[in-house]
Length: 241
Image 1 (cartoon, helix red, strand yellow):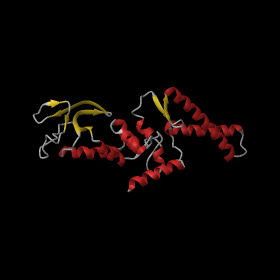
Image 2: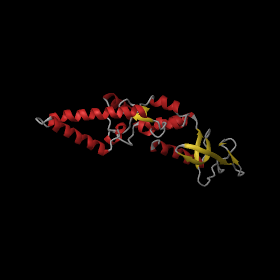
Image 3: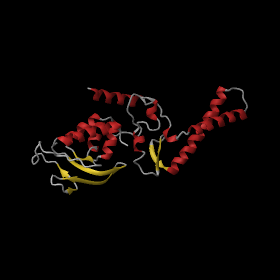
């Protein structure tokens, strides 16, 4: 799902829209939302009649009037925002959060591309803690796993989503490479053993790897390159002041 930072920004905008008229802001009450998909939308007018949506028009509604009337088990959903507000929101978000926001709100995406450019599936934010590169970390690919078709899996080596057939082949190749590396390491660490001993060490290593339940598409990533570090520092410096 989209990052919590994005949600907090939207919550603040939504909360403010309950008690004040924002020019150009279109809102609707949703009966329910499931997995990010809108199931049904409705609004209640001042006369109590139900409509599909309502556009807040500051020229026809007094600031003293009640614009938003909460309905049980519903939430306020923003349908439209002025470009200047969208741009302000995007500028407060990191590239990953902004990309997720842009994918859930089509009007945001042009502003996202203008501010952050093209964000790689492997992009992340933060100071480089290892947990950010593992399962449920902050890579854009991790956030998109629940959004892409179920037949696709993320291949961390190729840095793209692939079919399950291609992914199974990748796992087989990755496990074989791990086994060969374990065998070579054993000959360096334990000098003078027989081939059979090295094979046993290799087997024990692979059993431990499988026991840990490593998902090869979610294994710890390598440290960011110098270029990526420079981009991250440049972005933080730009948005800190």
